[in-house]
Image 1 (spheres, each protein chain N blue to C red):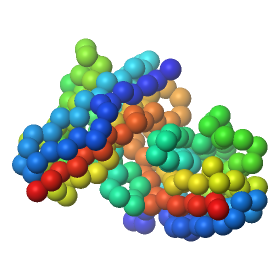
Image 2: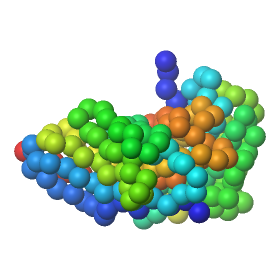
Image 3: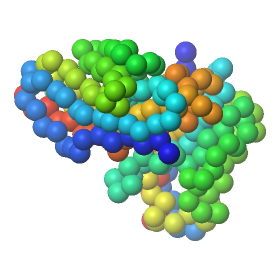
Length: 114
Length: 113
């Protein structure tokens, strides 16, 4: 089975530009999570979806961040406009809908905002 | 709310040494407990899990026992290898609500030959 697929793997852009990160969850998983990882703050949950519906977006840092899940096989995380402090590794994860099921992580997108 | 506390790193061990990484948790209900491992440049991977009290999760020589009385889930391995060098995350998933996981801050392990 294919794992969680994220694209791009690396993104370097200038501040003020729009950034779009993409995620394809594992087929059959109905929960999807976006995380941000930095040295200073560790792993932070930004938002999670269940059955394509956003359930908790309290971790989204500001209005510059938005996430969508138009269908069960695709999600995007968008930053507009981007700022240097958004530089981090962004992970997408998916899981089946049960508390004893683990999350499966993609390899992440390393984002650098200059 | 739910929380996970794990020991500060980095932990540096010689090859074949015994490893313990402590993890304690706070949760309502009956959570499932997990250990994830993150190798450099990769996402987190499930290492092992336990879903009820006294369960022992094991994988690749690592073990952890779900101790409800001490609210702990310590990770152990009898003989570490250089290839075990990674960051280890303890996590819980509460039994209620959607499948949201609370992660610890991670413990970096470095094994030297």
